[in-house]
Image (cartoon, rainbow, N blue to C red; front, side, top):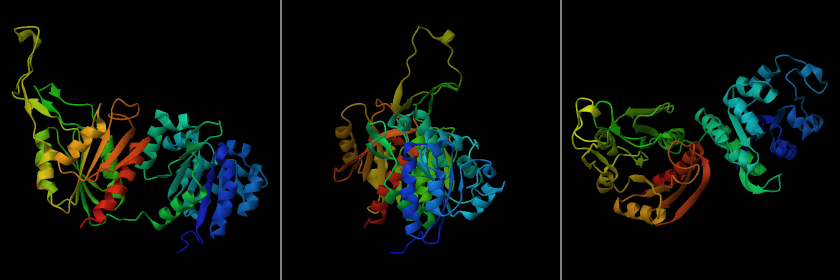
Length: 412
């Protein structure tokens, strides 16, 4: 097997978490496979592992202060961040604390690690490690999503015993996992879906009552946009049909904005025939008003204290695709259920001829509309269930797309 790290230049950023001590072993493993290692670290990190130790293991000077000339183990140059930025093939931050992650998101450059995050010219890989509650905090999850959206690679922390004595998600991954991620990044993300066309729907649909009011739902579109971004990163030609949302269009994704279910249906029919996979994550309104008032309905003109709006069903877009899709196409649906989730999802999977269905419960904390995280179960055509713990939607989308991709590539 080819050694992808041989002669590669790894810049290692160490921040102030208890897992910082593990970087001594990480440096040793990286050097065993032939990589050169340079280290930058925060002042807090020096409380967990000595710069002298790291310098000895890496056989290179260590930057532990923004002004390195203050310490004799560091290079005497006020442009060290530029030189290291030009030198490195990849910048690995491990462990990455919640504090450092937040600083990188907002461009705060007040220590060697965050300075390098702004000035580096190579790919950045972040390996978070922290207490479970800090990892699951909404702010941290939002920040992780933003990093992934910007093209930064994030290694999911592992579940296990933490420094506090508690057990949960937040452990620094095994060194082998970190090294494997570096190999993937240095090789370049494998474009396993190159030449494939993926159609994704996202967001809500709005059905107008009058020029001011509408019937809609709370969908933010975040899950669908994350899936479109993940598919594009795998090399697919992605078309995203979305209801109203303030989200930015993912890089290299063709975006089509719609408002109503009929508009979404029209565009889905236009692109479905040429799509290899169709992922229907949009929250399409089931009903629309029978009558539309061209003028704003004024309460002063009502004959009573109540207003009755007659509704009629919207077309079932997912059912339509299921009837007319080819055997070579992959169709993925979503089910948002508040009770009997698995039973309801399996029924929908069968009745609408889906290859996969992704089900979640909006009553669970951290799942459903508006959140940057989600908790889902993926059910395939054979009834096999894969459960995913709460994680950022961007990270979840990448995991889902790898499963869908494997099915698409092996589709006969």
